[in-house]
Image 1: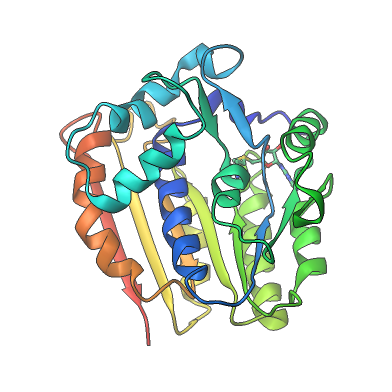
Image 2 (image 1 turned 90 degrees about the vertical axis):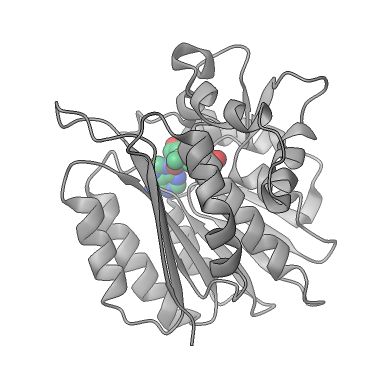
Length: 281
Ligand code: SAM
């Protein structure tokens, strides 16, 4: 059953954290003069209208990317992210918000390749249309991204950034992520793997994180951003996190400098906070 549509959430606080950090990882990866693959296991539609359709229903972007749009004196890396989002728009208003594949595309060079997996037929169609004309650089497949990932590893250039961003509507996704990471590390231990997850009042996200930490990979980074206190009813996403295996060595310092700013901008109440932990050997 595929009921999740990312368009409802486009540009929300979780997208901002995810895409900002994705951009930092890719900017670092492309510094080296060697090609790499970008693999997006759960790619979504690639581009979202903020002026009509699903995104306008709850207008989650107003508590996400819109907060950065109106911010003054952003630190350079956040200003770079904001400039990237604005490059998909004309004028001062935001009409469009790019999904992870389109964010990543901005960092691709002629010899880099993208492998994008999306299972929902409607979002697959939109994603394919958004990547028409990208030729052999971007391959879009309507396939289970966890299976698709296996077929990509190890990638021919032996360099890759992998984003694993499932909807987690099916609780099994938490287990599939851990299985996918275990399998991927056997096939390709040096890849950079970015796992996104929601902060919820249920045990599965923390259990998944414990399992990922228990893999004892030498190099990892974990960042969370909580935008408000968890609801009294016990429902709803109050923040999000990213667990990154083989992160750029520069990432801990950049995030230590910018997460306080991002947290202050995206705070919905006075309890908003971030955590940042890493181990880079
Ligand atoms: N990565 C996107 C971004 O940041 O813009 C958002 C992705 S959204 C959180 C998750 C997407 O995964 C949805 O579009 C959903 O249709 C798709 N999906 C769900 N299960 C999948 C699976 N097993 N394989 C590939 N795509 C899947």
